[in-house]
Length: 484
Image (cartoon, rainbow, N blue to C red; front, top):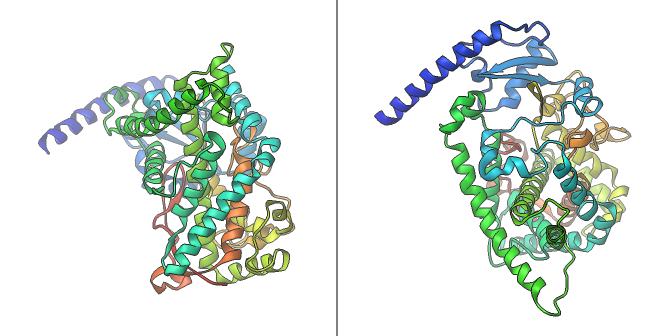
């Protein structure tokens, strides 16, 4: 314990000297063009203002100082935007200026920041990776061709829940959805299930969540750059362990595929991995095995946790508001037929189901803020925009009806609701996410009734969240499926 106290004292003294140097430099420049914000404390500046749930803390500060505020987080000048018009200027109108990202120190583990789409600057490598996403994974043609895989994973999810129903067991909705999405992505990219029936997706889910938490939580090294060398909170070291564990899995899959490709008479799978290995063999492409592993890690981390978390939040809100669940089931009964399988093409005829997904994104965006950088670190607080009473009537109330007849969408043109971002940095996986979310949620509520574990009443269901790069439920949603 004494060693740790001494270590922290040394860090604080170091930070003090670095901060005094920083203040002297700042005093020589003008800050008159920066927006208002809370007065900073010595050394730590406004770091203590973030609290354990920065998205909520920043929303409260915007109520005091306005829709665009300035914070001094250690060395880092930070501007937080909580206004759709200003968000449009940053994410769309001037997205070329604000397209580069501020890199958390934890993300530099194993050079992750240099090799994946969310973090690398717009460059030839970025354009090449984006092209692979747009042409070989998320294009309309590819999504249509892979529709049978999504149908297969929906059926497997429903079969799993039917087994729980027959045993009277509760279902962890987040974990069940996560397993379905993991297998959807791995079947699409690797032509095999990553979460196989003999194992559990829980360990992989926990590993992905640890990565999301580590990347999302405040790290003192991000605010005092001199501390990056010693990684005082161990964030980069932990991230290295997490990345290494996932890379070990990818190594075995890639080695297996290379052996298959080298075998005489082998049949190509023509999946994403084959596409990446073809690019590796093409000397004009900047693709090697190390980049392939980073690219796969990015797709799994970005695509699995965000999608499964949104399904879990949507189910939570419907169970918390039984009248909304009844209305959704009535629409499904009328259009599809109670208990009948849903076809993906039928989603367009289910406006209330679509409104539920939009309302879930409004209240529970997968990412609470969208980062960018141009001299200062800039965050668009999409969580605060989604709950702004000047934009939304009764913003804390789950009300899908607000989107019926509304032209507001989530595809990057309406900045009142931009959970996937906008401009050149918009999430490339948006088309797949929307297809899977509607199909999965619709299937869950059209195939079963649901009861909270432990006879908890719907109105007593906790809706607390825990902070990370994605906002998950503080407590997993565990519900018991019942026959319709």
